[in-house]
Length: 335
Image 1 (spheres, one colour):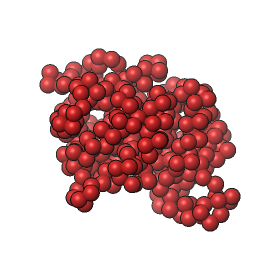
Image 2 (tube, rainbow, N blue to C red):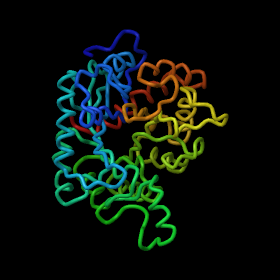
Image 3 (cartoon, rainbow, N blue to C red):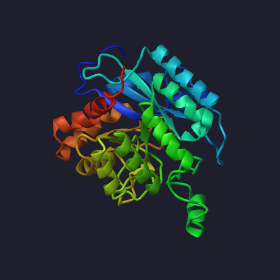
Image 4 (cartoon, helix red, strand yellow):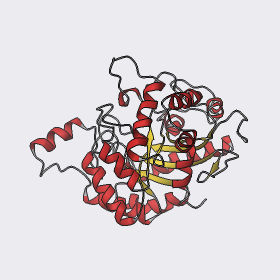
């Protein structure tokens, strides 16, 4: 993966890929040859002209919130560093004219860092290439409320004072420590109240807000998706929203399985609301997702480009969505 093939119309940056979960918890080999229940291979990355990956560090929580230790996150990051060496990737921010693939890392679900020891670890993680920090996954945790936790939503409705929405006091400190350390917050999976509180704190810190893998709620009413006002706020922050390929977040009015056309429809809406400089790709591939037909791996990006052109998107905007927006926003990180 040393040079981009001549057929690449644009390099691709992907803001959310879960390969490290597969390596750490399902014993996938570092050579990225085909492996059961995976979607990302060395060959598909090359075919999709992928030149930057934000690799997710996801410590699974099971059916109930699990109190993982920061040492488990360290072990996962070590696997990420080993994968980069095995694939000859460079750990660093994307370059304007990439000649090889570069990677950085993101925390998905911050519960593993929800302690004094975890907060103290954040600056060290940033120095090792962890530049994006999420708060929650599918359940509320000690940092914030999730958009998806049905039990907590019911509890908050009955007793809002006892089960508040949004950031906890520890979550507020977490956000501030991330910003002070040079990282940015990922609002993917966060509740609406959590989202707006992060936006407020990010504005105070002068930091962008990222939603690494989310789609438009007006097109698909999944709780993981973002409202038009939220999309506009991300654009105003100078941040990014990464369009994801997961079927439940795409929807189709005719109830047929979503396809690459539905992903293009969401991207077009994201560009309209967040702005052409605030949209990227955040596929969620390798995250045990059901991908839209035609985007089961990065080989489908060429078809996605054709569909975006059919919808009237300019070549410059398509190039921005595929790579340039990520390169510009991540240029704040020193390589």
